[in-house]
Image (cartoon, rainbow, N blue to C red; front, side, top):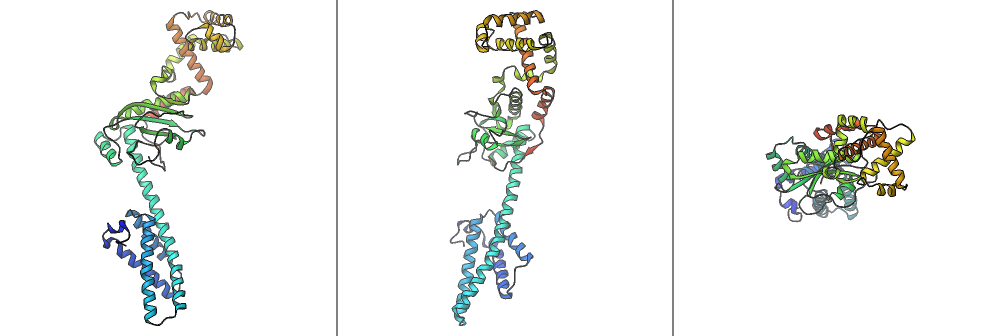
Length: 380
């Protein structure tokens, strides 16, 4: 085995040989007594496979070693048969029985090896999740973060971007990982993600490129031992974009005042009372507010607003004038125009979700909570 299998050549024979001898002895005893393997014997075979997995020996190498053992047994069996004049038909039958027995043992080896691999993968994923949680929520100290970063092949001097994304049927977790550049290759890891409260959360070495059909928030660049503020920004950007039904990649800068519109309920109530409530209820209200929002969004240009809404420009001017009459607001005052835009965005948000207070109240919980990390079976 040491001559033919490199992994075995690196091991001390005393680490490998005892279990092999036990397995050979059990199989020969099984043949000599012409019986089925007992549950205890099968469990010992499974334990053997699990032990090889924990030693870092892949299934293929373990089975290759076992075939070499089997070959030694067969060679010895044939040599003994020749010495004692055993007929070829008896030797063939004995060899067939040996192969049947080793098939059952091999199945048990493989089952034990696979179970141990899954357990090791879960343990490794749990450690990765703990590390990622420690990075994103600053529950690990900087020294420990840098130590574990080296262990995972991450560059402690590189500046990473915290990221948080909401998977959708149109863009599931795997597609988001691909967009983030976390596909497997032989180079140094580009980042790490896990599922946090159903969201893909982690950090990457560069902002994602390409079109996203999911909502992705991204933070500011920082060293891996200082990513907690970046993750807060990424979370806030994601929650804001999701609330306003904006797919794609967003940071706080690209969202302008929308994060404040979402979060500041007290200001929103005051502005709504002044800029929305006085407008009469009924059909004209929707037309007036829709026109006003379009007008403010297009830089307060009536002609562009009329073109966008496919109405006459006098219709736009009439609706804006009617709005000023109902509210007492002078839209030529830039401060009033900004406040009206704020109130309209909040009103639009409430119309779409009917859950604005709940969303705003949970933003800080999403940012601050270090709990709820779900396992990802494909660590990156």
